[in-house]
Length: 297
Image 1 (cartoon, rainbow, N blue to C red):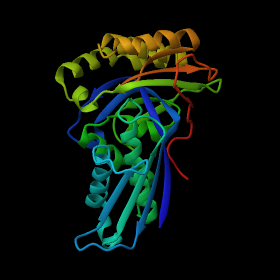
Image 2: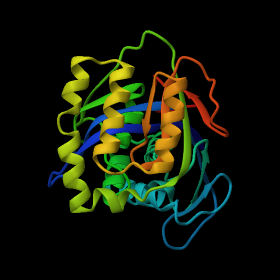
Image 3: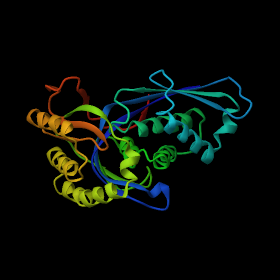
């Protein structure tokens, strides 16, 4: 019993945090871009018995990583709570390996990608009587509970340059996407991570983020093109005070070489959209825009 799922990574350009008592309706509005470099989740169930329920063995790039595997365990917990998967697995072992093509915790939405891959693979292997959005919504709940993200799940399901018009999980949120005249590259360079929970859970940061991002989506919808998206994203990064000098230096270089550049939310990472893969930035990650969204392999 094996299944593989690809979830694109996702870089948010700007956003607004929207709270709700119901977690499925909590999330963010804003805009971001999905990359064709992301996370491949390989999941299988093997006949190795345990006395008390199923056991999950989670690896990232073939190595046990307890810190970054927490989102996967949370997703499994929610799948059990909502769909009673324990009885279907019958004391066997779930083996999960997330193959990462981008840095973890650096604004690429990897936690959402891991959660999506886990939820969708389990749903397919066990032939659960649920829809794609039913499964994907468990990934959103995991993100909300872990405070690791707000809008990456629905954007990674959608693909492209996604507009999150209404917050929430897949099936609740309302999205649209940009029509692109050209195939574009996403050039990015990470200098490290920013702990998402410390930003979205901090009242001061939240107030500044919402004040800055509240009207940007309306501006983008008036002129939905890559240059406007990048211009608004850079303004958001600067006005929220989240932009470091080191990332600003990368942005300045990328702006001379591409359509435009900004900072990935939330990561100490610069990104740009370009008509070519060429850049002077050393060890940059060169991707294309993923237009399909999360899919089974």
